[in-house]
Length: 330
Ligand code: AHM
Ligand code: MG
Image (cartoon, rainbow, N blue to C red; front, side, top):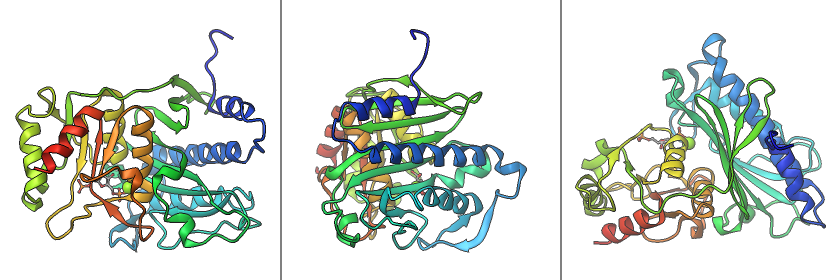
């Protein structure tokens, strides 16, 4: 077995066997997420060959154009939970209202939040995009799901992660025990363990922010980015900005540094959504020894008032983020 790499499914089943009371639902949920992401990844790789490139013609509830691939990925992911009894409710960036899976699911133990294709404006230029997800257990699975089951702070998450559709397809999974990465073997489709116990360096060489928004920021973010430019946050940094949060975060996880999407004057909540973007990545960051802040407090402690609520985000190495929060506060 020495030369064999663990598959994601093998890892999930091993993890389950360490919880004697486990009934396999959490494991099955993760297996379904991985399966949905294989389907989405395959469509991303071939979108330009078929009819899934470009806009669907619809305008989403956020006011942006819905890409055909966004719609495909949203439906593929959601339908992976129909008739499984695994998820009581699903929150997606692409659906205004939570989705209640078909079949006997209203007493399922878990709630899933996801962004089917984060960074979808990058699809048409063949730049990395990804699916972000989180799983939380319901406080009371004996009754039908209510909005309050969904609007809980990220401190209740059991697991979160993302799948990157880049040069390789990589599944990053954070659970209570840590953060692992699995790379898809294109020959078999399996996700094989390639990084175990990932840790974000406390300080890193990159800062990542859309600096074209400088004119829209209040004094705090301006002060922070001025400091980042001048080497005032840890070591002197260079800048990278992909425009897919999931890809910018993955670089931050692997190499260290900080990703920022501040609020703007008149739009203090910024752009990044809490339930299916900020909180899952904050969970991954914290499990990897990093930090994620709104600028005022931990992202994971924010209880959203509505499912598509946004938050400013400063995420990355623990020391770089701590410095950033201090500079933001003046
Ligand atoms: P999306 O989920 O509709 O793709 O939007 C979120 C994306 C993030 O992936 C990325 O960090 C951000 O929007 C980029 O925004 P901007 O173009 O304003 O820099
Ligand atoms: Mg997104």
